[in-house]
Image (cartoon, rainbow, N blue to C red; front, side):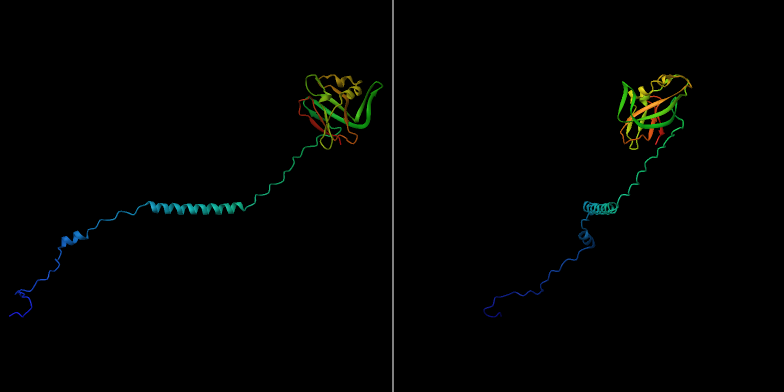
Length: 219
């Protein structure tokens, strides 16, 4: 009999069955293991890192090159060597320019005036009178032009012929002022007005105002 005060409970002849987990089949296990595969890692971050490394390396190389070449001092330029010019023929030596052959026989710088009476020319400094001969070596008649001749001092200053003084001094030398025939020779003077402290060191004689001229040393 059931005890007092306790509810009545029917006792089953069969014990309660405890639910156990169901064993999965092989196909179900395979289905659960299948997971979505991941795609390849994106390339953008990798490329960015590569570009950054290349840029840093380039900047480093440029800095090293700048330090290396910037620290080098440029090689000192070799001093310029002035071209040597030939002194040219001297007094008594034939010198040719174009169609004329010149021979300078002397230079006299002792006079300050030339001419006679009213036909007198006074130098601003002093007159240097060059005695020379001119020979026409061409096949045609030619004029010798005194105004085309030049004198230079040791500093390179150029002096031109004083044409009036030259005319006074050569008044008795007609052939020197006239046209020279082929093979003809004439002697005369060239007059230069130079400072009192100056003496010409060379002449530049021309067969015409546009010719190259020939240098004659008279120092």
